[in-house]
Image 1 (cartoon, rainbow over the protein chains, first blue to last red):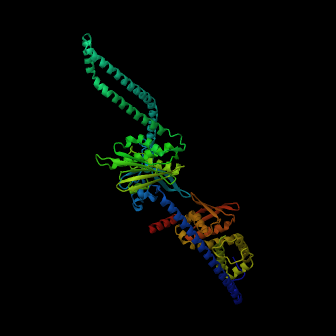
Image 2 (cartoon, each protein chain N blue to C red):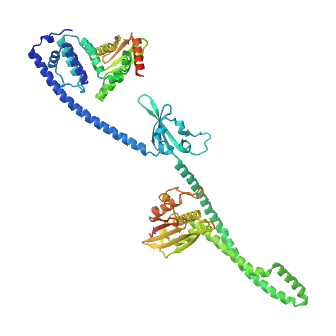
Length: 433
Length: 193
């Protein structure tokens, strides 16, 4: 390479001119670079802020997740956790990172697993197994798989709810069967009643005839040719204990009548209870509805409590008779169960049911002596499937259904007053309509 | 094209032929860019071609020679500006294998929209095929860079452009001293551990 103008030959003026041009250009470059640095710095700040906000957003999502989130590497070692992992396992993040997934999650053996919930168990620090459903996805970068993220959702509550639901479905079937039985009993109980009435009248007539025969037999004893037969008849009367029959037969018939009337009343109440009329609203006397419900619920409370009714003068209210009967039944059964739990040996509790007109509606108060709903569960008692009763004892739906029927369907209100250690009062108000 | 290439070209001309020569080239070239060029800026590639065209006229050299010499000059300058990235590349062969990630990292850091030349290495039994793809088709510049890499690592590289079609070219590379280079890489790794 060659050049026509070597550096050494440049004169001083020309050299000065070149340097001035380069100096000027350098100054402008500095200004441009300052502007660029300023812009880059601003953009960097904005980008960092965006990254920070996105990071915080993702962190908040991860933290608020009710499920456990476990991130693993390709060797199934835990590299990060999130969500409710620590809450469910009882292990801190430091205690969890680096562990093998096999130490934390036990997958169900599908062949041996008899439970209806397929999935896995999360192994807590104390060794308890938390049933979980597991969703797994791979974490991939542009060119390779880096690991896996596992989302484990606690199924404990779901399993309990499903168990309660199945129990409720069984009870519903039993209820339907009871309604059918009540329907079938209704007809025979009617002709039993008619027959008992006929038998009562027939016995009355027969006893009158018997009295006439006795008079005739006494007269025949004075006649020599009839005396032997009359004495034979007297022996037969004595053997048959006619006097006892005369005294007890009418009472027996009356007791049978009373029994048939009670069975008929229970059957009628059950029929009325199980056929609410298709959910239609109609003017109803709430006091009648309460008495019907109590007839059906008698077996639930009669061994543990006395029911005291203070049914006031109240107007008819537009309601679904079946719904209100269901509500009263739920509250009475609930009261009986609460009393049973707090009952001293040999003691009896009390269920007071009071009705009265309040504002433009009717108030039904059901008060029990069951010690009161504990404060820690008061907020949850109207939740579906919430129950503190032993499996099989309650479905956890009674108060939930009661709340829904009164508040949502009848636009009324349902309140709970508690006297700790004494009892609870459920106060229902239903508008007249 | 990134301003750092323009500035490297300016430094190349100034160092090799004198600052007055570069001013002469600048005075005799009509550029689209009206303001002084700075490293982080992005400018039309046609401006660099215009400067080079003026330069070969004033210096009375061929375009290929100019680009080769520029590549040889530019490589160590560019390498010195990215010491962290270069630290992981312990020899010529290693450098070419990691070239794409180095270039992409550096260029996209400065300009996310940039469309830099693409280098795809392909190992062969006796060396490597280096596939080059760029709309500018500056093949002699690649030759200069290869020689710059050779000087930087003090390793002889046998190179030959075996095919080209305007925007793509394939260079056949051989590394006669690759054994010693591998040994140096192993020593570097051992020293780090």
